[in-house]
Image 1 (tube, rainbow, N blue to C red):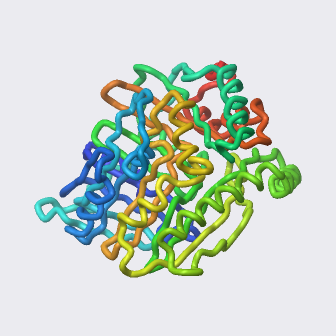
Image 2 (tube, rainbow, N blue to C red; image 1 turned 45 degrees about the vertical axis):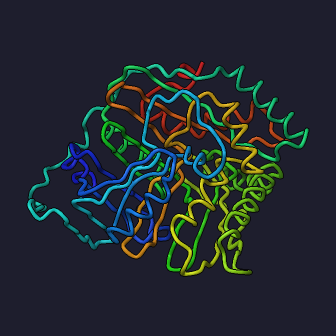
Image 3 (tube, one colour; image 1 turned 135 degrees about the vertical axis):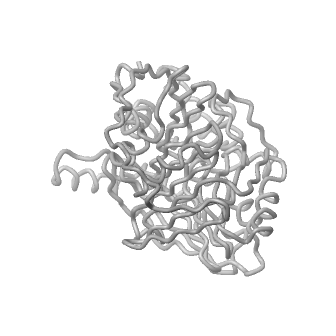
Amino acid sequence: MKYALLHYFKNESSLILLDGDDLDNTSFSWMLAAGSMEEVRSGTAGAFKKLQDFHSKHKDWIFGHLNYDLKNDIEHLESNNWDGIQAPEMSFFLPKYMFRCHGNKLSIYRHDSQNYFKCSHLSIYDAQESSHIQLKWKPRISSEEYLLQVQEIKNLIQRGSLYEMNYCQEFYADLVEIKPLSIYRKLNRHSGAPFSCYYKIQDIHLMCSSPERFLKKTGNMLLSQPIKGTKRRGTSSKEDQVLIKELQTDPKERAENVMIVDLVRNDLSRIALSNSVKVDELFGIYTFPQVHQMISSVSCEISTKTDLKEILRATFPMGSMTGAPKISAMKHIENFEKTKRGLYSGSVGYIDPYGDFDFNVIIRSLQYNTVNKYLSLMVGGAITIGSKALSEYEECLLKASALFDVLKENHEESVS
C-alpha cells in the first residue's frame, strides 16, 4: 500500500513517507503525506520562528525538514562550502492528503475538498521497475586527504580545541538519471532502519535509511537518542555475538558515546525543568541488517510554556553530528569539510496538531536534484584522540555500503 501511494502521488511537488515500520520506536508503522495546501520555506534567518508561526496558524499536521545549516541562525557561524543539492534551509507543508498506518489500521485524512481519494485509484506498483544504473562515484576528497585531515583534527584535540568532531565526506555523481522511488524501495528493504524516509520537495529527492532519532516530543516530555558506535554485521549469529561484545566494551566507542550523551544532556538542560534530565539508557546495542549500533537515550520534562522555537534552538543540530564542544566543533567542521551538509545531518519529520513531534537524523541517505542531475552521498564519523585514521575511513565505507549496494556499484571501484 505505501509504495502504491508513493507511486500514485509521485508528481506532487511535496511528498513524504516516514517509514518506521517499528512500533517499538514510533507511534505508527508508516505515515505518508502528499500535496501541499500551504507551505513555509526559509533561509537561515528566523527559520525556527517562521516554522513556529506556521504551525500556530494551522494547528494541524505538518511535515518537512530542517537543514543542518540552520546552525547559522542559532550561532554566529557560516556555510560556504559547495552545495550540489541546493535544498532550502527549512521547508514544511500542510498536506492535501495524509495516510497513517498503525499495525493493520489505516487512517486517511483529507484537506483537499475538491478532489476525493479512493483506494481504487491505486494501481499495482511495479516492484520490478528497473533502477540498475551505471554510474561512477567520485570522492569530494581523496582517501589520502581524508587520512591527513583526521590527523589534523587529532592535533586540534591534542591542543584542547576539541574533544570530539564529527567529520564527514561526500561521494557524488554528476549528470545521472535515477528513479528515486525505486531506489528508495530497494534501500528500505535492504536496510530496514526505524527512521527511514522518502522525501520530495520540488526537484529534490531524499532517500534515507536512518536508524537515528534526533528528538521526539510527547506532551511535556522530550526524548533524544544519539548514536555513536558502529560495528559491521557478522556472517553468522556466533560472529554477531562476538562483534556485539566488542562494540559494547570498546573504550573508544564508549568514550565517543558518553561525550555525546553529555552534550545532549547539556542541550536539554537549557530548557528542561529542574532535575528532570535523565539518561534512560546508556550504551544500548541495536542490530540492523548492515551494522550493529551503540545507542543511548536521554529524556527530560519541559514546561508547558516552552515553545517549539525554544526547543529547537536549544537542541539543533543534534550533537551526534557535530562533536564537542558543540560550537567549536561546528566551526572546525566548516573549515575541514568540502561540501555544505544541507539536508545531511539535518532532520526530517512531522509536527502534529497538538505540537508533539518526531524528527530523525538524516544519515545513511542519498540526495538527488532532478534539475542538475546531481546525486550525493555523505557519510562520516566521530574523530577523537583515540581515532585511527584508516579505521575511520573504513567505517565510513561500511556505513555507505548499503547505499553503494543499492546502486549496484562496486565499493573499491567507486571510491578509488
